[in-house]
Length: 231
Image (cartoon, rainbow, N blue to C red; front, side, top):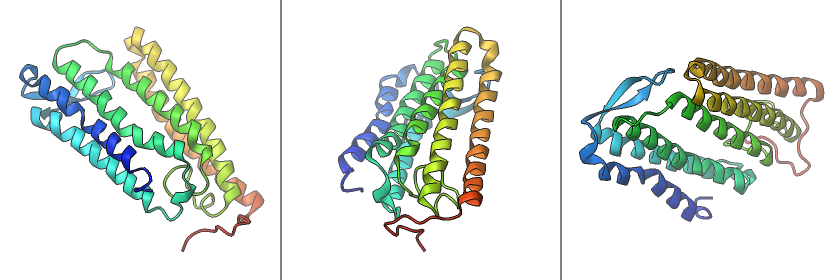
């Protein structure tokens, strides 16, 4: 997989590092200590040095990008990962890197942003994209609803990922909606945070329970190709 998607991996890694350029352009205007973590109300509650903000954060995200690519490539069932879901995974880090740069640099320069609302909108869109592509993969260990029962049975995998897709997309839509509303009413920041946390928790519980109940009802059915669980 690394060889097949080498160009894409290089491009997305470089895009993840690209906010360093924006940081260098703004270097003289940025304070020596920059807020890099914010509470639910959008107030800063964590700070980093200018060097760590400009160089460290993109570098860490780029390392995560490469790590994800390597882990997917060594997945024993990597051939089952469809191209579109894989591309979505690879563009997540560049998107996150640029989003963080926008929020952090804007706050450092005194630009007024509703950070809670923007985070909710970003997370909502991310959930929608992930949910949309969850059912498009066959069994693998990298992308999808990976329960002991879904990883052991193709039909359970397909069922579990359909349920997971619905849960993720509903959570994403609700998160996106609350984020948009929070843009106009900052008092909804806590409600938006609750939607994200509750949605992620319920999505996990519902998909795991659905996978287990499907197993209890239907048992294990190996694919005709004999593609059973790896030892």
